[in-house]
Image (cartoon, rainbow, N blue to C red; front, side):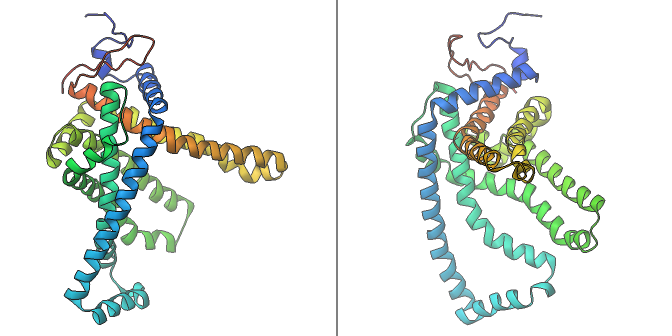
Length: 316
């Protein structure tokens, strides 16, 4: 076996294998790139958020008149009045269907905005840099594909959990016990974590040029064939914020100590929020993009040891 190492410190085969060293290197590189490109990410994120809000307004301007023309204004008012007054008598499937119909047009632009940021992540992995303007090119050129990918993720991950809450939730919470609530909540979290992990490479695959269905296929293949590699990154992506937020749950205990302790905890909370929004989120986009490129065999740039090395090798 060839034991020659790359500037990253791992041999070619180990780049596809999971280990604590590999995971640490993934996040070390991604955080370094996130710090380096924080301004571009902030401007890009704000830009796509503005475009997303405007697009949602346009959709509402189009959808509401269509509802009025199709159903009629009086019948539309009657529908929402019925929903408000007889909510408990409506079947769970109907309730979820109504909310899904309302949420999908709103969620689609948001999902496209998140997906477009993976275009910035791809550029950063390839060249160490990006521009805020670049995200709009991805937003425009991949809009339908990113929307389609996001909707599939919504249907496969969020929809089943929503249905579970609609149908099983009333039974669980009407006769609550610690065991049933724990099992119900843990099952929902585990399902979301596993399914979203399996689909975590959808947006990077779409940015790479795959169609929506092919991107789903690639993500499923990648996350099962390299399960430990993909899920170690995915779980750490969720775990890092969880660990950072845990001290904030000690607030009631600090309240008995004094004002100084509460002030310190408050400052820590502000620092954590800023870190998660401006550093961890961009780093998460970068790390998923980087892992996708490693596993799919897309070559990035090569750098000296003094900078994060992102030489990517291998094929699916």
